[in-house]
Length: 334
Ligand code: ATP
Ligand code: MG
Image (tube, rainbow, N blue to C red; front, top):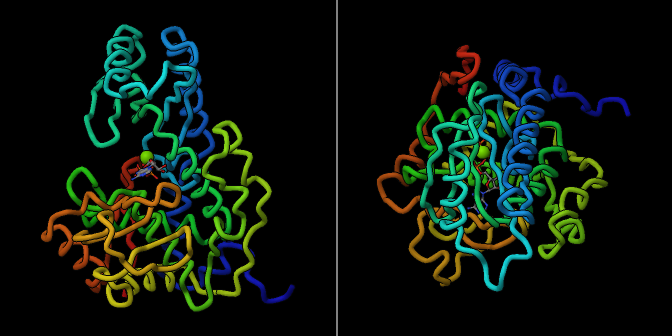
């Protein structure tokens, strides 16, 4: 119908919005980037199956959700089924894999990282492509396809999230291993903001299509689950720049860090109850399937204060540098 916005340009009439479109077009993952990741995934799966015949390897994270940049790593989930009773010790599996990967010849810089979810981090020789491989952390497959559904529900989601990731990286608040925010937490924070606007840009997909995101769905069915969800028809016509500024403003003055929990599952902020999951936590962001806190890495008052100060700062000029192209892109936030 006449007057209805239907391309990204319709949301980008002002300078900041135009810059966001430019940043997005320059940095978003290209089809060839995904092909390279997929080729390496399938080669790895074939090789791993010579040690663990039942193993399956799934590409997850931003590479798969559509929220990645050209420089994003590739997250992999190794699913071991048919294993003996109980779940296999991931550290043990990753140690076996590490020894197995070394002589293969096409991987380098292989290191075991003993985090809460342990991972094997390595690079593909030549391309320099970085991989993070976990064992049986299948919630990552479920939430990747939930994020993917949000990424395609409205045209504005991808460019806003990319700008927020760049903004957070520029301000050094995007590193869970250093006590700040993981990319995953930032994405949920953006989705929550877009769900809770007076005129929402996004619905709660888990509420509207529960059967597509059933937490006990068979792993192989997950990618198919949300395939037929139609784009959400939002009445909100705000520009990209207004939404980016609104996001910063929401977290600097509207959202109550001390009493509220971000729930993308419910599509709203929930009151903090007294459960151990939320008690004494600076930032509470609910994992949409496991319902635990994805922002638990933020456990120092100082880091929390830094994060809040970045949201509150009125930064007239914000420089981000794309890791791949090394080209400076400036975003004017006034
Ligand atoms: P980037 O483009 O910066 O790599 P990303 O979207 O891949 O961002 P990460 O924070 O690297 O985000 O997380 C990768 C994936 O791992 C997420 O998409 C999600 O599937 C999963 N994940 C990360 N943190 C958690 C968590 N706390 N609980 C459950 N799943 C998580
Ligand atoms: Mg990633």
